[in-house]
Length: 212
Image (cartoon, rainbow, N blue to C red):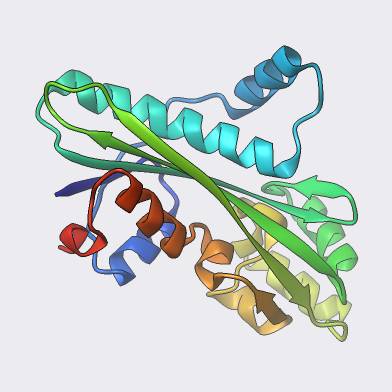
């Protein structure tokens, strides 16, 4: 049983490899801002964090799943995901700039937020239309209250927080600044493995059959 990760995220790739799965990887051709704006306009309301991560995960997985289905020889699962961090009523994706990452860390110091992770899994096989299962997982993340400005500056200078949801990692340099995680810890890394296992089962695929 083959697996394709509809993402170029090193963290999601690492998670699957640590779980015994060596996936193909394909970059989805999705304009995330445009997709989110279109869905919000169709519904007439601003999307909640849970709705937003699921909409984006589904768009990315669907793009790759239908491209693979068009090739006709892929038999397996396509996994897509998206993550957002919510703190104090605000939703944060990737900060991209050192200035924004620094601002967020000053706000996160001593606080607790929620990491929302959307999951979309497609079963793709020759001769059938792709079938999808979806879910959203969440985990709360608490940050140390004694992080000083010099530590924040050094962490931002490492550039690690610039391209990750919420401007932090739990499995690398940022882990030392996190005091507590409530929920599946892999959710905070980028994808809930237990959730993906459940979605695979919904599609009739046993998790252990995905091991390389």
